[in-house]
Amino acid sequence: MSKSILHDKKEGTCYLCVLQNQDYALRTDLEEHHVMPGTANRRLSERYGLKVYLCRQHHREGPGAVHNNIQQQCFLQKKAQEAFETRHSHAEWMRIFGRDYTAF
Ligand SMILES: [Zn+2]
Ligand SMILES: [Zn+2]
Image (cartoon, rainbow, N blue to C red; front, side):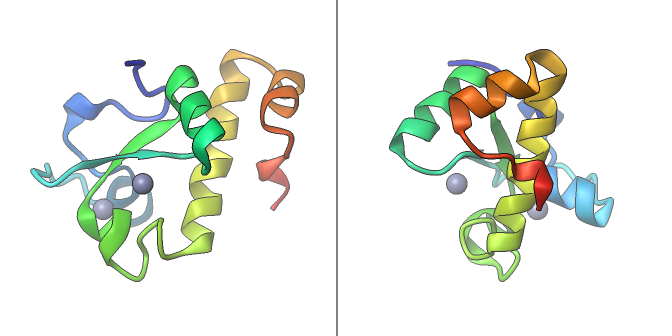
C-alpha cells in the first residue's frame, strides 16, 4: 500500500475538516478515500498516493460528504492533481488521467 501524497494518516485529522473548517480535531472515525473515481482510477490513486482520510460526515454521510457532493469531489481532485504535479509533471498527469481538474 502506498502512502498518501496529500495527507498523513498518522496525523489523525480529517483532510476536509482541516482545509475547509480549520478543525484539527483528532478523529477516531477516519475512512480512507481514493480521490480519483472509477475502478481503474482507484488503482492509480493507490499507486500514486492520491488518497485522503476523512471523517464520516465528510466521506459518506453529510451533505458536504465527498460521495454526496460533486463540488467536494472536484475540490479533492484539484488538490490531488496539484500534489501530483509537484512530484511529476502536468504532461504526465494528462497522460495518465486525461483531464485537467485545476481548470474548474
Ligand atoms: Zn471532516
Ligand atoms: Zn470514498
